[in-house]
Amino acid sequence: MAGDKPSVELCKGINGLDKVVLRETRGSSAEVYLFGGQVTSWKNEHGEELLFVSSKAIFKPPKAVRGGIPICFPQFSSHGNLEQHGFARNKFWSIDTNPPQLPSNNLVKTFVDLILKPTDDDIKIWPHSYEFRLRVALTPGGDLMLTSRIRNTNSDGKPFSFTFAYHTYLLVSDISEVRVEGLETLDYLDNLKERERFTEQGDAITFESEVDKIYLSTPNKIAIIDHEKKRTFVLRKDGLPDAVVWNPWDRKAKAMPDFGDDDYKHMLSVEAAAIEKPIILKPGSSRMMSIADVPMYRH
Ligand SMILES: O=P(O)(O)OC[C@H]1O[C@H](O)[C@H](O)[C@@H](O)[C@@H]1O
Image 1 (tube, rainbow, N blue to C red):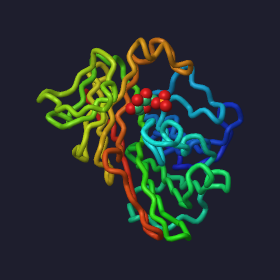
Image 2: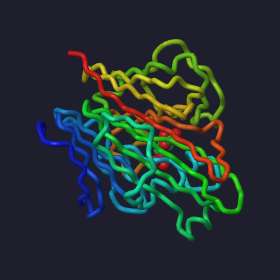
Image 3: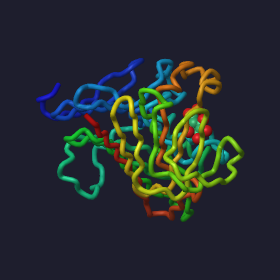
């Protein structure tokens, strides 16, 4: 409730799964499930939801929840030997009670730190030891910030490489009224054409059919403009050169059991990512990757 103190609360979500609820003074909030380390809700100070979660989402491990912000690690999509989008989104994360310091931002007081480490069984699938720390934070103004720090803790001296994405599902009023700015004239790999490389035209991107593109070397700021809602999401990213834009449209929507037939009209995935050039970490070294989603309104 607006006027309350900021709070961070661990409680039970759908199907008894643990979730952490962040609340800020002016009324904005966010929810994070320990399953997947996945943000599943982000509301502005009027209590309006900003993230898309499918009406048919299944909150039942091991299938990742359809919506919010799944974490794709250590593999984006199906390009590699691992399961689609890697395993991080299907794992139970823990609350990190003793996180190492992050570069300080004194304004941000409402956050939770999660951690994922491999079990012995996990190491059979991906033979590396790592610590993946995820901070989910809400600013007093209601911006959502995710910071990931991945560290190679291999004791055998071996480096590892990975690809990564914050698979953000934004809630939009009508996909045919949405415009994305910041990706014009950039090169992209088209997932619908065997990852062939193309160059985007000069206009802002609009949507009238299925899209699944990996834009390369993108600017650190991308705007998603929702005309009907008079709302713009500004996605700021750091340490993540690529950006995926995905909407399955009607035919693929129908083929997904956890996605409503008309859901595609109300979502757009804009995913800050590192895909074209995998990130390589030597033992003892770590990498930080962050996003901040900022909602802005026109009145
Ligand atoms: O169905 P999922 O495994 O969650 O993947 C959903 C989508 O994720 C990304 O956006 C990929 O680029 C798409 O090719 C994929 O269809």
